[in-house]
Image 1 (tube, rainbow, N blue to C red):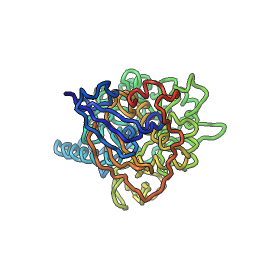
Image 2 (image 1 turned 90 degrees about the vertical axis):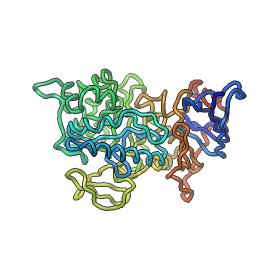
Image 3 (image 1 turned 90 degrees about the horizontal axis):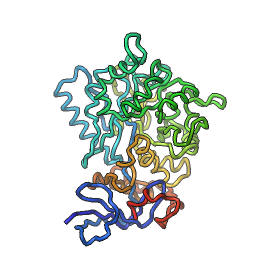
Image 4 (image 1 turned 60 degrees about the vertical axis):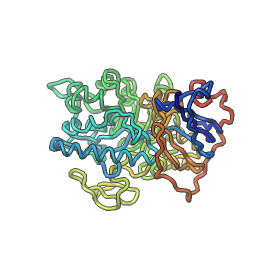
Length: 445
């Protein structure tokens, strides 16, 4: 007899909407969402009573530099086989711990580095489907094709252009990242500055030949070059506002691309990562960007490996990072060096700053995130065929438990003492709401 799990006595969040008092079914063999069987008597059923709480897709973090002491870039040509084995053990442990925050999959982000680093670390980040830790969706390569004027904490000695005299831009790209196979098998996103020589010509190769996402970031580009990048296949902007020229009413810059009228349709507007930690972006500017194009906003943590560690000074390559509570910066400067806020807290911040519902905020790191990297048939939705990766939330917006491919895990996000308002006035009591397409609700009927 086939076995299924029925999640009941719960409300579902998907598509930016709340589906009240709706059950959800999972095939225990495939650990994928299925439609309600027509004859439940033919199945062995496990019932999970969520006692009135909320079930949403597992959160997706597409930009994360490290977690629980693990720097995703921390291997090089001097790393021995034993070093690599230890790194893999550390990686597995950190990905298990990060699952407790509600993030069920992420893009491990490798900041600007030398070729030997990419050769060593990228195979570790090959796309996975596991039931005991966060999945990797493929690496996010942030640099080294970036502008030194917007380097942030990236080491300038690693920076390169893509227009050498003795080889093609494509050859340079493959040389830096360890070859075509290393990119296709192990990478999801490449962030580069489009004004760097050769990059505009590389965008179609990145997006069409290699089938990766190209994102604008760490750039001094102007609005017009940004439009050229979109025409060439750019579909994303990395951590909006940060490491780019700030918008002016007569010179919109990269920020102006998020809702530019100079593209053929809204579908062609780029997704944009937004760090809602209250440090990287002022709440009013978060609200401005989100309200400008909520369907393309993707919350990211931009977390550094110091998240979860105590305050103090930490050596990072040849630099010193100072950790002071929720701030990270390069010693002796005001340059920010990544973030320390979890994705659930970013969601609650966005709710408060933009006065939106929990379901609208969750859309930014589930539906939008999955759509931004082309994985909506697998992750980030409660559609039939999607993985059984879920977060359970209470009505204050805190994650109370996590299900990874149907397996339950405890949450590290629970905090019942903070009173966050949860707005659910847009929730749909009737799943046949005409505003929801049939393919989006078929899994929850």
